[in-house]
Image (cartoon, rainbow, N blue to C red):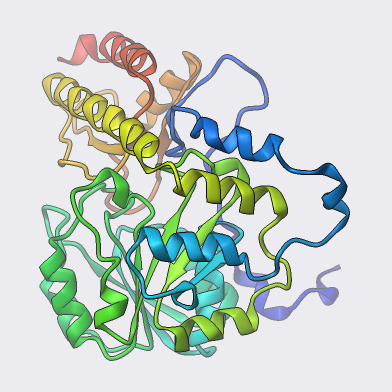
Amino acid sequence: MRRYVRKHLEHVEGYTPGEQPREAGFIKLNTNENPYPPSPRVLDALKALDTADLRKYPDPLSTELRRACASRYGLPGEDWVVVGNGMDEILAMALRAFVDPGDKVVTVYPTYSLYEVLCQLHDCHLHYVPLDADFQFPEAMYAEIGRFCFLTRPNAPTGVAYPRETVRRFCETFDGIVLIDEAYVDFSDDTCMDFPCQFENVIVTRTFSKSYGLAGLRIGIAAARPELVSEFIKIKDSYNLNTFSQAAGLAAIEDEAYMRSRVGQVRTTRKRVRESLITMGFDVPESSSNFLLARWNGSPDAAHIFETLKEHRILVRYFKLPGLENALRITIGTDEECAALIEVLSSILLPSV
């Protein structure tokens, strides 16, 4: 059967998403989903849809949603925004539009592991520059030369947000496209969404999966100069955002107050959980995301803790990757979910602390 498959794919390993259990009863703290439902306006918008219209194709350009995003983020107009079927499609489109096979793509390590898979699929070379000891932006990045750069801010999986001025300096020095992935930025203190207005080579991406609680509808956006957005539109799928997603996304982004209130709850819980983890002996960098990276240097090891939590029907994320072997990434859930996590962790680690 291999003779039917592109030779290039023989050495490509697909992306492994976080576990999605099929049975009920799990506490899911492994995929950075919002623990709270989306705005009630989203349900109202979906109920208001005329089912007779489902026979028709959706707006291929998602015009209303693009216009609302431009207004929300202070961009000059809808021609500065493109939307996609989740952030993943946006990232894939960016490589298709701006990177040729064989080109060099730059990013830091550790970072979002999908970048490597996308570069493998596109047959371009991904070059990693390690973060410094405190997970901060490495000075060596300023000397990098490449066609394209993925820069996640706040970083995943560390949760650390590099200073805005640091990112600005990098955008000024890097000669290629800089894609600033702001999937988690609503949980932080500032944004780089104004950078496309300042730099012709900057793309800023957002998702509706985290702060807006719409992971199940797959909505992502990219903001950039119209000349770059037109290239996205040239190569995107014809109808890449369905009718439900367009309606839900529009309702969500127009209810800023609701989103901010839920983000505030997550941030409050995040602070309390971090303090508890540190008290237990974990090393936890300050996070600007809706998750925490908890490093453990004791016994049992992080892999054992991960498996034991799963036995208690609590899912967190464990990456068996260089530099992360002793770490767990923990999504911030509701207060009740996080209290259950801390209780089980305490029972696991009691002999060790």
